[in-house]
Length: 114
Image (cartoon, rainbow, N blue to C red):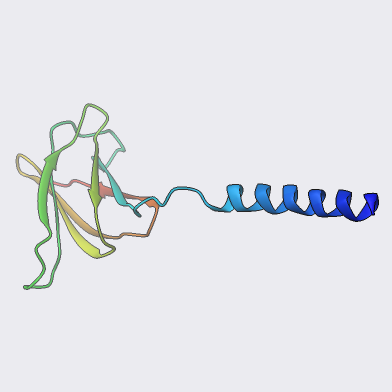
């Protein structure tokens, strides 16, 4: 009888541990793009205007930010998408695209040319 009670208590403790470890709080997925803007020599371009937008007419994604001193800018979205990238600094331009992935920060480097 004692052995049966010990087994029951042990099983209860194990089930409690499993249920607590698998019932974590739900977190909304994120979709991040990190755009690095450089010149043809690999130098970072500060204050470049970077635009991410969807190439589909009915999509509302169209956002612009400036790079920091390291030539980097980060965007975050609510859904996955494939977005065009346009970067401009004066007369220098570059373009590319990025495919967002759930719960990942996707990096894309854009090279500006005159």
